[in-house]
Length: 318
Image (cartoon, rainbow, N blue to C red):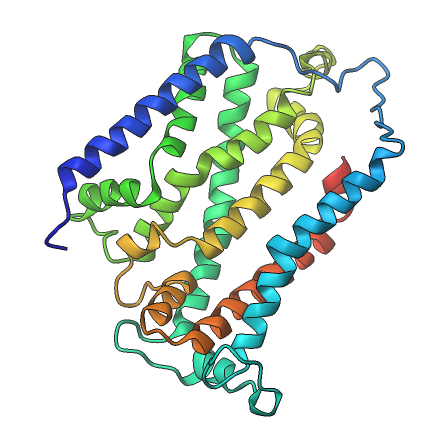
């Protein structure tokens, strides 16, 4: 807008980046050198912590959190989405699924073509982005934790830097950098922004598991005559499966609901679900906004359930 101060915004972003750099330096200086290895070649067995009587307090705390932070907001969205007009009163005789039909099948606001367009785009970005990011995260994590030297430490440092910048600031940087390239006004610039911003989350998921795996296993495999690729495929990746799976699902969920980057980089034809929710909220239509939000929530829940079933229990406990 006319009141926007891009110079001040850039200064604040750089200040956040400086704080992030300082905290990463502390982490690498005092925490990274410590050993967190738990999976070794010497009869590894995990320990289960018995909370005793405190388990009921822990259970109550978690149930209360789920009720307040998850169940109640979703129930409120569901109730509002069933009303033609929300008047802050629950009117059972007026409830219907018309808002879902309007939102998902024939609603056509001026700013974006259709919410259904956002569904396809969001799924494409979430699936493709999470897959590419986790492949990169696997390679980068292996280089960081299985190679020595300044290069690996520098790579570890650079991987975390994007976390220190707000998504909207990073999106502006991506926009300015690639506005004259063929990927501008396509889904690929959104994909690039997503991966740049959230890659550290996937990389840290794999790194946390890799830190717990002793290098003895790799060394034993190499001594037995296995190649680097065979060791990676037969030993390292199976042990990293929980981190890979958790990181992929986390990124998929983040990409499916991401807004701050999308609102800067999207154009006509590249809208996402979250962009649709944003514009519906601007139209001050609470029932339609709630309907699209509920659809997005249900999509996320179904995807998580399907991924857990397809991956199998061993993906989480390997």
